[in-house]
Length: 578
Image (cartoon, rainbow, N blue to C red; front, side, top):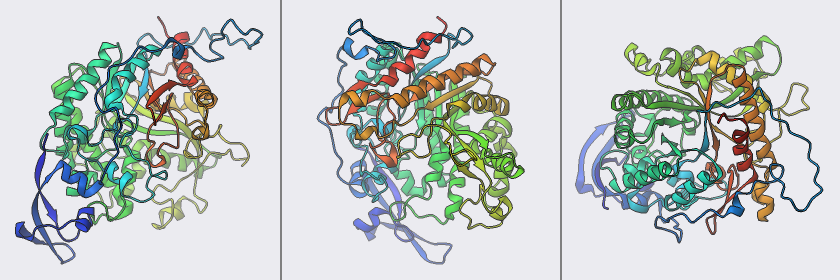
């Protein structure tokens, strides 16, 4: 299928890869304009196909031998046997296990949903197949030296694009009832806007239908970090307000297509993270005059407006849909009982969860400490925009992996705020994983490739209470991602050693126990999604860091359940009301 688009390409004032490696026909120059710096910016119209985008900006990509959709084979019963300590076969005998009694005061409600999650660029592969256009991550993995420390790409990933039927059959076989996945924006609209790729829509048609066939509830995320490359090069992606109508039109396409089959929707995933990817590496994407420190907040501004527009559009198509915003972070614990650490904690809330939760749940505008900073350069939201943004998340969908101790900067908060070159400016708080005695960590560490993550499940009940008391979500709280990377898992060579993941297993058991405590205390938690369905491309860490409850042999694409998968499901087998 051939997709072509006519667009305006800046010949000066831009450092696109294409400007370094291709020539532009001067005979097509359409206009010249004066830039703010006084130089002349020449503009030309160029017809590009999707293949041109790949050739100019990304280059050759890898493919896998399985390159058509395959039907699932029966799941071997041997792969569904739980590990010790959940199951002991009759032979050999002699094991003595401490009794783990069921807590009769705990229960998951009958309608509490639990599942697994994955994201398009991390698992799909088939990056050039069937009309998909490149995203920024195709450039970041192929062209930007050391952006991914292992030099891995998402070209093949877990080959989910062709093996999704097997993947859905497997999770259904083990007892998982929900599958949350993201759509590839540039697969559906190869240029991010303009022509729609019907072949991509048919693929996702079948993915959703396969979920329903196996009794698995599909949950769909519109955007999980893979901005269409064309939009990034055309106007700077999320740095420009031009992305708002483009994202809204993308939302219209998918809501219209699947509103009758998909009830749960997430518009954007973790903008705290992807907005902080800005500034993107220089010399690969369209230049911007926005100062580096300010770029994340321009991104966040346009995310909020895009989310709000998509929310109202989706509700207009089908008012019964559950549409939410997916943010991330962790519980913030004052390191000491000082006033300065208490203020640092509040600054941390404002610059993390509050950045997006305060507008969408409470006021339509930024929390006070963040607003004090951004109002110096962002155009304030109008009253009409605030009204559009507020109350645009049905569930408080939170990716809550861990917790942190928070403290004031060594120089003090005021000194940080008065020094724009301070490493911690503008948030002006600091974090640590170690108690104030400087000796004990908050919990067992994850893999060194994810130093931000420790097993801090003791703080989950307090975190859930804080979410409910602060943001008061009308349809409850969902832990939309949680998990841990098993330390040094990538160094293990035997299958038996890979599949036994004790840190991850205890993480899920203890985290779900903490949710049960919160439920027993009246916190309205409605569901959980384990990250992730299997080991995948963990962004800048490549395949070196493992979060999956399934192991994938990337050479053969065979899948295997790890012990943590059984531990996760077992908690619901024990505690969910029948």
